[in-house]
Length: 372
View 1: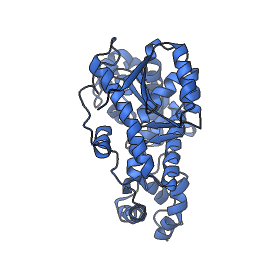
View 2 (view 1 turned 90 degrees about the vertical axis):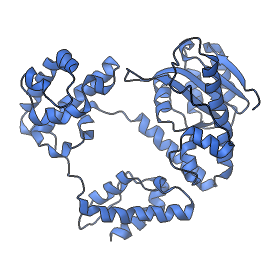
View 3 (view 1 turned 30 degrees about the vertical axis):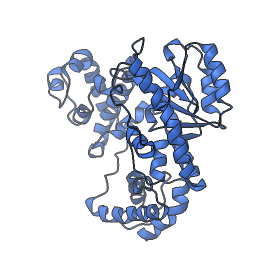
């Protein structure tokens, strides 16, 4: 393999000059290395940019002004190429306040070309370029300085090959599929932009539908507190209060630290640090008047609905076969469940808002016909 031209960016002026040059390119390949062991937010340790000729390594510990990079991410004329990018998006948003658009995710592109679904980067590089990537640096300490020679090589090779993978995938994509892929990229960016209200976090708790209104008021208070504390303390949610303790806390509503400590999966540290706060939150939320309780959540679809779900999934599978797209990219289970919930068991059904874009145009009517 020819040697890669690697250049470092260690100050604001160099970054600004490079961003200006990259904005004259049709695309840039982007990757990040970050640490997220004991924190809520990812800590950026390295940003890699490839333009097909040179690989640039940006040391985020040395950069103070991210505005030029934010402008590059926002530039609609430059395609941003990433692989399986949800965590990278979080890093960019945290560092720069901006998100990459238009976004070309090579993992999703592989699905549109029927190469495979949710393919790891190494596998995709092997499949398309016939190159075996070293796997030994993914878990290393990216915040150490200086980085080892192996780390630098690994980071540079990753983004160099991403450029080659992009050319190979882009060459094979039809105009339609490319437009759909960029549509999916825009959805990923929109999802990352959504601000999640801590007061709504309770809706994501498994089995929340089995709680009554008063218990849900307690669950809502606990989940909101957990979410706010995770952000404030910059610690993982489960470090604040474990996921599996939330439901039993809301259901049994302990009144003292002894019963609190007996709750399933309750960490002794949580009882010690935040026990009094939790007992106060539970007591206050439990005492709310009925008109301030959340509305109970609808029950999940019954088992009998799975035959209908299967028929709906078949609509996507047929269309996927016709278009040579992996079936998993066609219709998400969540979307099909949302569709069924609009009218189960006897209809009429309406297409949910979550079925959007080309999928709605191509398969919306067929789904309604299947249910009729």
